View 1 (spheres, one colour):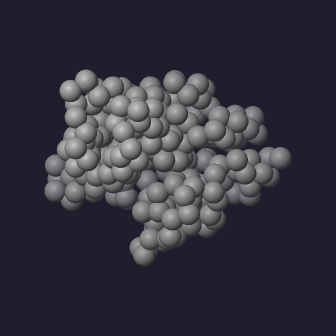
View 2: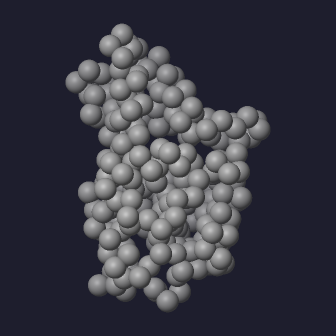
View 3: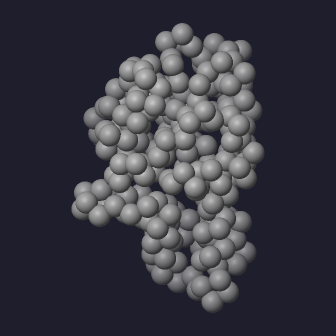
Length: 226
């Protein structure tokens, strides 16, 4: 399969980076409802990207993330009396990578495969997270929606990877944990792996995964590197 692929492109949030890590880190301050708050934060964050794209009201992903956090805290009755919001936003800039991610990325680089991130996040957010996870040296390119002022799954976002690596869509292997992102990338023309970490059901949308995995540990073997 390696000879059929020019670049492995990864979504960042939820695929390489654990989006629940910030709230989990502050679970003692938040209380028993921390998991509900984490879920609302993530759901509203995504909804705001889609709605802002449809409205033509783009703002950067960090602002969207803050707005979604405010909604989640209000919805769950979590107080900001002790500066919790600022702490959570700071933690979001250094989200933990999933355990298998560093070794997987290093194996790809050792095997000669080019790698990229294609994300809704800002370059500053992604750079901060990669630095905190000590994996910045495993990624060739960080591609973000900032240059387009529109969010995934707009086809122009996926085109960024095609243009950056001067290839065609079928020679891009795209990885995402988000089923809607999988649908968007597949519909665009990428070969797509769905990293279904939590056993979610497929979306009823055009496009679907070429392969489904539960984590990224098997990617080097998938590409014939082991």
